[in-house]
Amino acid sequence: QIPVFLSKNLQDSLYLFQYPTKTDLANNDEAQVVNCCVKPFAQEVKVDFGLDIESGHYDRFKGEQFAVAADGKNSFGANPGAKGAERPTYKRGIMDRQAYTSSRSLTDVTKYIVGIYSDREVHISPLTSIVQLRPALSHFDKEDKRKKAEQKAQSEDGDEEEVLQQVTVKFARGSGKNSGKEQRAGTYDGFVQKIADEPWCEAYWHARTTATAELERQKLFATSHLANQALAQAAGDYLKRLLPYDEHVQPVEVAPDSSAGAAQVLPVYNKAMLRTMPLLEQLRVVLRDTRMLSFGEMLEILTEHMDPHVTADKVLALLPQVAILLHGNWVPRSEVVFPEKMLSHANGVPAEQMIRARDYILFRFSRTACLFRSQVMAATQLPPAETLDVLRTVARVNGSKRWELLLPPDKEFEQRHPELVQRQELHWRATEQHYNEMDWARETKRVRKRSTRKSESQSSNPTSAMPPPALTHSTSTSGAE
Image 1 (spheres, rainbow, N blue to C red):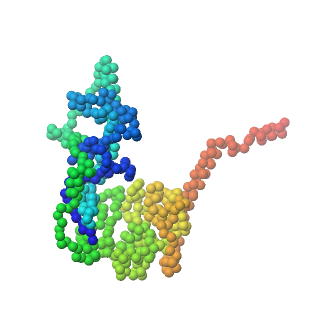
Image 2: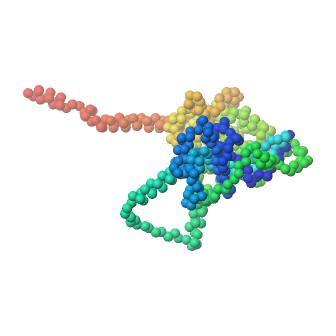
Image 3: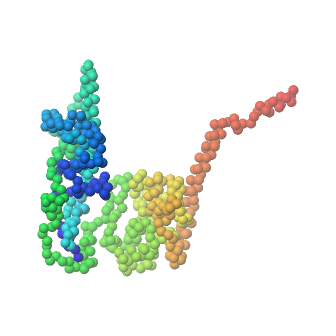
């Protein structure tokens, strides 16, 4: 047993830095930090890492070019405190630092913690924010800004005559004095401007080996330990306390006032909820989530996680209501996978069309071992994204780029239950004509296209199909003579 303690010493100031552009070999523990700044309200960080300009791998010529492009030719040695002078990016006239700015990777970090293991104890601390640091190429932006300012100055010097322009004045409507500012503050542009207007706060960077860093690292440990809190419950009772089921636990459902055009969210259930449901609903949920199961696997899931006293005969009696027998395995009915009034996520295809396409795929798999996606698209008239969604509910792509069933055939189950196999075969024969008509319509459409092209080619060259009348006329004339 390992005790776990919660430390809240750094819950308001603990940031997790991520470097997505760096490889696993890079290590910033020994890096030299020249400057660092923080925006507390926006939770943004900017860190300037120093570059070793004396290294043999550093290109000094290119570094000086970057400095000149960002600050101009006379930036080296300039007084940054002069009136109207802009603070240079590189004071030494060479690119001797690399700036990294942060962006928030997650808006909700309540599910993430930082843990430290020491002396057979685990101490966890909640995070304030998770940020990703990426290189900030601000020197390129300053170069573009400086070039535009120089071009504007040259164009103003070249214009000798003043050009009159028509000016249109518009007055914003508002009751208050700051109504326009209040309206802009509620928009996305106002939010971005608010973040940009927040000033950077200078901060001190303490290296990993310093005493200050060690003192801050000690705050990751919990300071107060509650004694005599040993667990005196059985494993089952402890699990029930962790996952209680009461009236407050409800599945995720769609709001009743949602429009029919919005895609529905399928309900989410945990094991505690499934145990309180009827067997038929349990089968529906399990088959929908697993896509395809053998009868042995299904019976094992039910007995181990839901009802240990369930019998095989009872399961077999209810299975045909929510599942279809396909080569000895059970797949959910299309109405279970695509409920009524549900739309596809990609193109908003209605559930009726998705159900019809999936039934066609199930029928074809009952007759053949593999399918081609192009064949399914031509027969069902579904877009490519929806065709993939339907195929993935029952099949997968093999090495020859064909779609095959998720599980191999279960011949043993078919031999033990021939009446179920015969009943399912009668259902396939009753609907076979409908699915054959879908294939026939596809082939007819292809033939019509070819015949149309042929007729167009004949109509474009009518002289090639007409008999030569000149030959007959010449023969009759010669006979008259």
